[in-house]
Length: 112
Length: 110
Image (cartoon, rainbow over all chains, first blue to last red):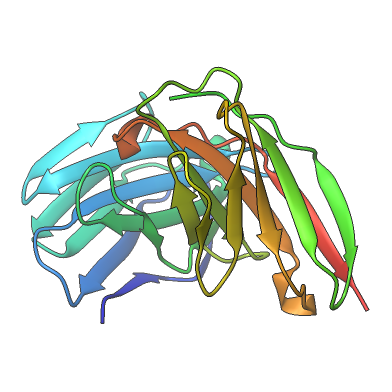
């Protein structure tokens, strides 16, 4: 069966510090991968999308970047965090563009 | 993708059926209706989807009106663990274009 894991689960970082959130998928190959952010009281916002290794699409301009160094690994990064980067970050995968999304457990980031 | 409208919150007694409505009056012919739910501080979980026929799986039933302008997600015997935010999404086949609203916060009460 397929599983998705992301870590760390919670993170408290000072403004200006770097960020790295990691996500891995097991039990499938060549998944579509997604990073979402969910701010308090807001809906899910798609940040990045990837159809393959090294192929990243950014959906909104922001202070973050994403990379996909391996088929089932997706990393969300920032060189210098802003207060507005606080939120609940979710990694997800799907078998194809139109299929069900399967989400990880989420990473709660607080920037102070 | 179609914009959907859901009530912000609902209550349901444990053991009773929970009927969650969703309006999607602008849905186009090729758009599916997807339902997800999100338990507090967890990632969303896929529940069910349908195009125009009613669907049932081990989690829920989905009833879509004949004109496809609205649908209802039915949890036949709600439990406390069904307390979550439920999202109804119109989906034309591209996950990148999904519009996630605020959903319906369902509280199942003992």
